[in-house]
Image (cartoon, rainbow, N blue to C red):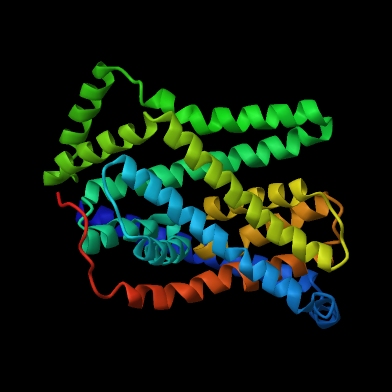
Length: 329
C-alpha cells in the first residue's frame, strides 16, 4: 500500500511538472504573440489614469469576495471582523491560485479557526460552497454571454433567467431525501482514510446544506459573484479600449470567464499559461488583433493578478496576532 501511494505521488509530481512546463511554454507563446519590441509604444497609449483605474477595480473585487464570505458565515452563525475578513480573503485568494484545484483556499478556514474560533467544519463548508458555487456561475456566465446577447432584449432576458437559475440551483441539492443522507453517512464513516474525522466531515456537509437551503443567501452570493466577474471583465475592456480596440463589455466579461475556466481546469498556479492563451484566443474570436490581445492579457496579469498577490504578504503579517471574537467548536 505504501509503495502504491509513493508511486501515485511520484506520478502526480511528474504530471504537475509536465503541466508547469507546458504552462510556461504557453506564457512564452503569449509573450511572443505580443511582439515585445512593440509593447513600449503600445504602453504609451495607456496613460497613468488608465493604469490607476484598472488597479482601483481590484478593491471592489476584494470587497465583494470578502462580503460574500461574511454573508455565508453569518448564515452559519459566525462573525469575523471586516478588517480580518479582508486580510484572510487576500491570503486565501493567493494561496488558492498557487495550488492545484484551488486547494490552498482552505487556508481561510484554518485562519478563521485560529484567530476567530470559527469551527473548522463551518469554515471548510464556506470555502467549499464558495469554490463550487463560483465555478458553476463562471460556466453559466461564459455560456450565456457567448450564446444570447446577440438576440437583443429577448437574449438578455434569457441571460438573466439563466443566471438566476444557476444561482438557485444549489437549493435543489439541499432538498435531498433523508434516505440519501443516511446512505452518505454510512459511506463516509466507512472510508478508511477518514479515521476519526467522519463526524467533522458530516458536520461540514450539514453546514453546506444549511447554506444551500437559503434562497436569499444564494441570490445575494450569486449577485456578488456576477458583479465580481463583470468588474474583472471591465478591467480587460478598459485595457483593450485604451490600446485602440472598442468592443462590447459583454465580450470582455465572457473572455474573462472562459479564460478562468481554462486556468482552473489546468490546476496550474494562477492558471499561468492556459488561462492566458485561452484569453488571447477568445479576444481574437471577438475581433481583437492577436498581438493586442496578448498585450492586454499580460497587462491584466501585471495590474490585476500581481497586485493582489503582493498585497497578500502584508495581509498575512497583519493576521499574526489573533483577535478572538467568535464561538468555538
